[in-house]
View 1: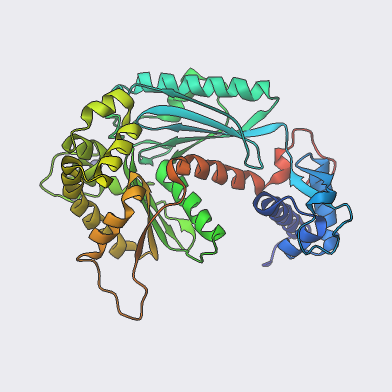
View 2 (view 1 turned 90 degrees about the horizontal axis):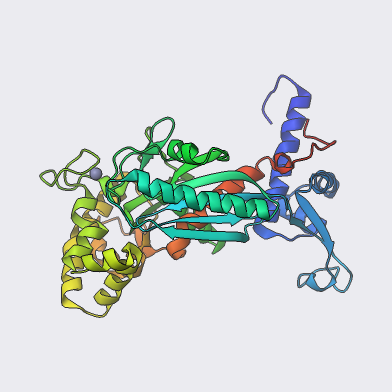
Length: 417
Ligand SMILES: [Zn+2]
């Protein structure tokens, strides 16, 4: 602890930090006994006991005796073990996602388990934000009703859009999937759903990148510098440097779909020319592959599934469409790689299914790195279609657990200060 004007402020800060540490450990590794929690946090057992008491009293943590669930090798094998788990049974987190096909809402408990899920296709009315936002608001209202029915208060709403966001307050800058210019999604939702909870707008690439990074960490990887690049609705991604997202001054960092790769190309909705999405975006590839009607009939997600199946099945037209897009994608990734120098490029969306061909195109004419250095790996993501939803829920939960006593509705006598 650095110098502080007041010793009591320092101790309050330490206590708040330690409460958060206990809550985060229980979220990541729980349920745990008090002694396991002491080992996992590095805190003294006496401190853990006091911190847990405050969390139990606030209803954020629950204890239960579980004789059968003593972990292997535990000294207390055979004796009942008091395990602690996150509770906060009266609150929920809500993630609302808007992609090129549908609006999806997922309600989760603080421990991460899903409580309710709803979705509705919006029919992709191009250039008509109002109709799409009506559907988004309907799914939101239905999910808020479900939360109320479950006796849970929604303490956090994250709205995930498949488009770059920027500005204050944050708005969608341009959504090429829906032919939107700037749209104030949160403002429009608030007009339609006046009881809107505290809401955050997030670009899918950033939250998916954090979720993929967590997956790599859970698998034992020490990777801290990562580029996440994906294509499903549009093309996007994120840059993670030293474990933290690079947001950029305007929030555009990682908007790889709007890398201007062809200076003589067509004008993009973002105002630039020849953006990657205009030469290798999903709609371009699907049109070249003869799958435009499939998009209209079954939506973009299904059409991309069919595209991948045809490419992997050796269909000539689908393969030609992919091979036309591939050099642009590899070109863009090489520019990104030399700009931020990541350890790994993780591919998401339908690109994860075609990771080998993207890795091959990237390596061809790729940067030659000294033999002593590990080359930049291009790999498929692990999380599939729900990467952004999972990531948003995880980011929201982590933020809430930074101040776990704030999760309680009833004021706690042993409050933080
Ligand atoms: Zn653009």
